[in-house]
Length: 327
Ligand code: SF4
Image 1 (spheres, rainbow, N blue to C red):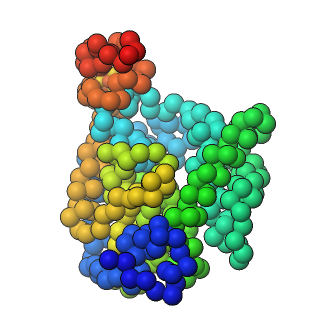
Image 2: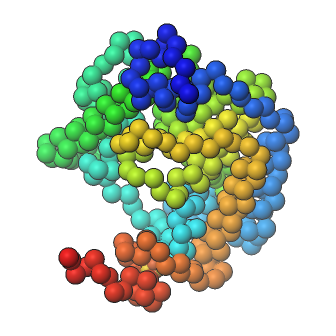
């Protein structure tokens, strides 16, 4: 049941629901053992160290990488879905388009909006965000410099839709909630030879002593995917080791429907995630070191896979393609 307060009375019904149920303002927050960080780190290092025996120094596999292996949520999910697909697409350059730049621009717009003292129209925030991103040395700045007016218009429209949907379903974020957008997380392992990285769309709150008071949220414009809960658990692990206290909850928030999938974090969740990370690293390292050939795991990914023409399991999975013939 949603309890109406003076603060929630001015909110849209969706905002009030997010505030009461997802953010759980005023709810109980768990505490965690201070030795948790050391235990997690020891399990990760113990799992990773044997994988690196006999391998070259950091940076030998990928130009520009300071670590030997840099693993983020996309690679971790990819290697668990299909090793051969992962290996075939690993290292492909990211292509910026109006569609792929939408999230970065929208998150920058939300970040700027959270710092403004007065409400600013979403389209204005998006324009400010595009101007800021043009000057950054990373991300879509190169593409923004060459994009056509039509592409920029598409980008503005799509990003404004995201910012508007966030504004009318998420409660305003007061400064005391310490909102951070696109917050980077980094966890070096094995003396920096392995690095786990993440970037959380929205972080709220701050741990107090041993008490978990942080909520990590990924903002999604598409439909729920099986990989989203695992992505969030990965972030929870990085935050737990970074701060020494895990987030109390992680969530994927779906803007098109104003719904979410949330999970409260406990030690079991973190233990499962440690095993998934070590398993993923073992596969990545084995494949890059050519210790064994990649395995095929046919699934929905096959339809978009560049190696499907030479992959028997993938062809068997997708043929006959009843959709290819049309109705
Ligand atoms: S076609 Fe399917 S099974 Fe084959 S490599 Fe691609 S994703 Fe894996």
